[in-house]
Amino acid sequence: MVDRVTHAAKIYNELTEAGERVLVIPAGGNKYPSSTSTEASRMRDQALEAGVPAPDIELEDSSTNTAENALYCKQKLEKHGINKVIVLTSDFHLDRSRYVFLYVFGGREGGFGMSFVGAPSSDKLIANRLGSREAGLYASSKKDLEGLKLTLADDSFGYHPFRNRPRWLLIADELLSPEMKHLRHSAVDYGSNMGYFSLKMVPHCGLVISNEGERNDQYEGSINVHRGRLAKMSAELQPRNLICVTTFNETMFDALHEVHVMFDVQLSLSVFHWLNLPTRALFEKALSAHLSNGRVTFLELPEFRHYVGNERQYHWQAVNEWYAGAKDVEEVVERAARKHGLRVAVKRLGANAHENGTVRTVLRVDLLDLPGSDSWDDYTVPAGPNDPSVALVKSIFACKS
Image 1: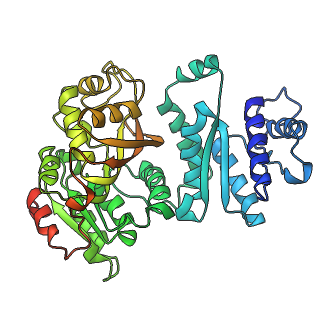
Image 2: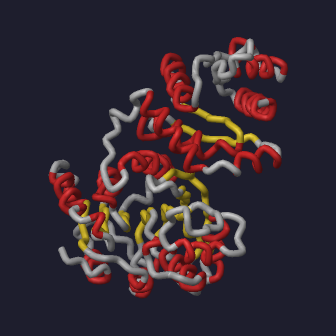
Image 3: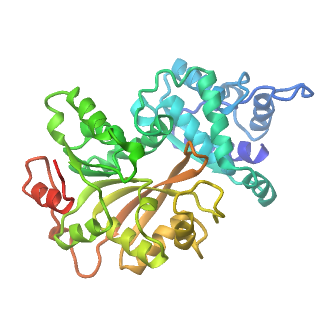
């Protein structure tokens, strides 16, 4: 707790010195019957000792879990008309806090500019926390959100509706940022999830190509759901979403690169473990080819760990091969890109739990340099549904409709 408050006081001083008006909200109710004070009040006392003035502190001392914490903080911020938020927590709790707070606040889509900071924890505490399965922690977060009836307004659909909103909000916070405004001409969505993510992107992109058509009978009928929901969008937006009925494979990545077609944005959420990539060499070749197809790629991969076969992770033996020798998922991606002559910037956005108990990590990967002697001017970026390059893309993707 002291580490968090010390870190918060440091951020407070930096912001106030820059001329910002800052409100500090220590949050947390009295979870322990034997305690005579709340977590929030103890943090307030520490913040006062660290030099934060009392008028700039407002307690949230009613919450008993992270979901309540987020909701009650949001209510206080709305009362003050504040829409720029820094959520500071312990580093081992960062992913789950981001998951819950984005769900409650809505991030940029909900009108809040949010950033998340993890205060360093001791190695011993991190080791103890990592001993508990993250999937179980996400399950408790879902239960807490449901307990507050916050999921009732969730408009998610798709194969696994509850986790789609948190995934989308991680992506939307990047996609809707000012820095990406010039990178919204075209997007491609691999594994479209009944169109959930594609239809979310359509209002913000000139063209979204959805590769709709899965390898598994579990997803039969997804194309009809996608088409039905697209038909309900405005006549202006409907042409922006090209539904490509296909079964995509890794050869398509090389084919796009060979004809020098590139997208501004690629969405590749939990698709690589469906491909036939049993070795690290095959995985790195396919991943690097894929990254060369987009200026920004939103990539979701299985959480970084050694799998033993009882975690219900699809193709877990292959995932172990991909991850061997790396320290985290970010290094896995950077290593693959470097091996094939790409320079990329990898940013961890967060993580979420699958209904089968596995955890997935969501990354943003920016392509900084092209391989060999290629230049950006050598590549065509489809600018809309009528762009001549779209016919070439449809041919490569073997679109049936």
